[in-house]
Length: 398
Length: 145
Image (cartoon, rainbow over all chains, first blue to last red; front, side, top):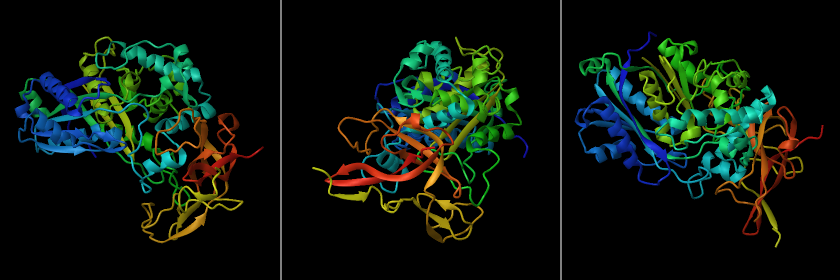
């Protein structure tokens, strides 16, 4: 398979992350308008709107694309609302990009927005005995941090990761996000402060687990032809989109499951599911991890950021702590990770988060990431994983 | 008033004998195990089996990973007592079935009693009480080494 044509990211825009409890579409409108203004494209020219569905208790909530389209003023655009939990934003982007590459439209808006309740993300109310996401709370009291902590603990017991290693991820990301105008938390944090925060799910502490936030992000995608006619000679380009699902048997326990697949009859695949997500993007783009200038990874926990270093091929298994401690993943280092500040500084606004990662890489590649710029950035990867087997990775380049 | 009767908190997932075990299913065509039980169509993509035998899974396994819950989980979790008592959880690998199963850790044991690779065995203990009925759940108990 030859590498597909590029599509252009002409506009990127966000509504800052926070906690206000307003209707999600209000945030979505602000992000969409910011992206359209950034692109210099009027709303009336948008032919396709792809929206990441809002998330309610693990399942799709409000119909995002048509709600935001109606709120901006019906313009006849075709719409698609996409649900893939944390990966919803990239599933929406994938729909927009595919439509452009198929020649079915030239201009598409991709938008995700949400408003989230306080505290643990909890399942839908009522008795739902056939729903693993309900059952895991009822039968095990297994919250989302339970699963994050299982992965973290393996790093400790298998690779010798320490509490200090995990805390340093938070310290790094807090520093990265300090001057990001869209981040919710813009405050330096010390290792001692992280280690003094209460234990939530051993070995993860409160300051190491991402919060839930309100927020919105949007990008405007166009065909390369349209971009040139529009006067954008060398726009940031989408080179690959990976929305892979696992391969059976998936031998890593995943939220919200009670078990892994059994490998008794069929050997596990060569790559784990998380490994396969970025691999899909590298293969499609013909660009490898050595060519990346930066990466935005889904740091639902500090330890999970370290897992991602290995999953996206920045280092071998068990070497992520060394990469972190050598400063490789700090801005100024070999391969900065989460220059935006990551989920550590944003908290998660689920359908917006994967699009926010794309906004950040876009700004980095344009040299517009004020206060957190990775110098000379040429290529960047975003990666995340959504509940129920949704992978997402996007490779962008200048 | 103490509970007078005990029932499994979920039907058909485990036995409650003195040597309890988890109940799963096994595809009669390819031999893949499922817990919780699968029926209908085998999830092995190389298999088109539709028949499953109910099987008792191994009572012992090795810890794949573990953690605890220092804060009370939200509903539908039902706290067993008014004052919240943290509990541990472990994901345990069964050798024969080649599957990892998540469960709470037996009462009285915490993360300090666990390690990746350590041996555990299945026990059944009270999870919560509702309307005077004690609801039981499977748990993983560290095996003294």
